[in-house]
Image 1: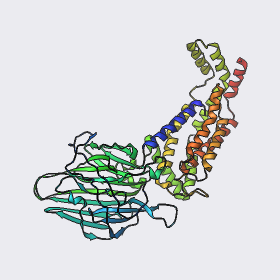
Image 2: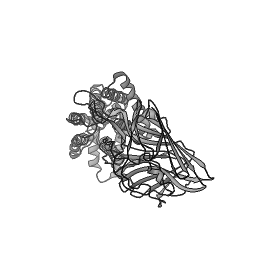
Image 3: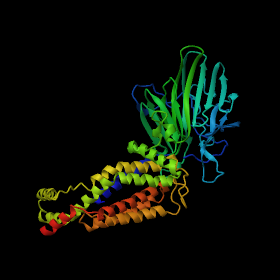
Image 4: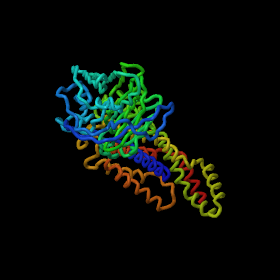
Length: 540
């Protein structure tokens, strides 16, 4: 690749790293004990037809008040996908583990916690802003039904009655929830909040399991905020179609899909130790004894593309960036290879080979164009010297030279730029897909989602890039610029040291295939460069 191509690659990868740095969330270790949380306030604004974000005002009561912690019920509900435990306090789901993945590579390691009662008390709680209802937020509910796949809770406060029904799906990470509230008199009853979030989650954009974020989907638009990107002031999103909210990291999530007739606002919050997002449903009764019903689907588990695609927009929880249109088919191709070989390391290798073969004609065209430009460098240097005081004339003569020899000065760069969106999309797939979490390759690589423990692939990648730089035709005359090209592999090596090994495997293999392609093109019979070389020799 020439200097412009390298610059484009560095710029795109730089943008990608900045993008990852600002978009991220990990499930912490699970301890089924009680914990302490802090306080915050929610906001109240009247709904609008177009989505806006504004600072909210105070509520009638402080709904995120401190309390001693959750007491878990002894009965565990277990399906093929989830292990779930409820709390009588608030009649809420309190402790959920995904059976599909474990916290470490040890065979007896605990299942990954999706809800941790010690760190996410408010996840999927039902919080009321009206003083008459606020006791129902955390009072003890009576368990009226607890089956193998379902649970029912009831509570009352005077004439106010509330019932919560939960139904677990047997072979999926989905759960249905219904909240029914009977209000004894007509009027305004404040709002009910359904939050997801955590108490001061640790945030590290470079570690997928610690890259916490909150995401919302409203009016067919995704709003994503990392934990370090949340505003300390409540941010209220008002719109006509608030579909879902979610909290999670790059691999696991807790999502709430609104199936109610009521349309809520969406509020992002970061105050007094709690960071998250919540639905804010207005509560009003037109007549005494009116029933208000809220229906939800909870998604609790790994970010499985097939499962998430069942709800409009929910697959965007997997952050594939601006080139997601390429990422989805690449993910499907990766899964296709896995179905045959049952090894994601081999699947990455095959996927990289396929992508390289598809773009081989463009790579060949780019290489030949750079080779032709290299042959013209003596004449270009002579023109720059001859017309150093007349830039217009020099540019005219250069263009005439390119036209005479049928060389496009952008011919080496444009084919590479065309490929970049696909390569960046593949990078995003390998960096954000649950498929690579704890997925082994062979030998020392037992988890493609974590860094290479011995840095073998980053070093091999750096060496391969040095070889590729050596083989690439140099189209620049400045010796300093040429030397700078050899520094880039060193920089890339240090960048890749702590990235997931699946990514470094892909980049190393892609670079290695690039070397093979360049060598084969170099050895093939070229009909243009010998002619150009002869003409250059004659003219100089």
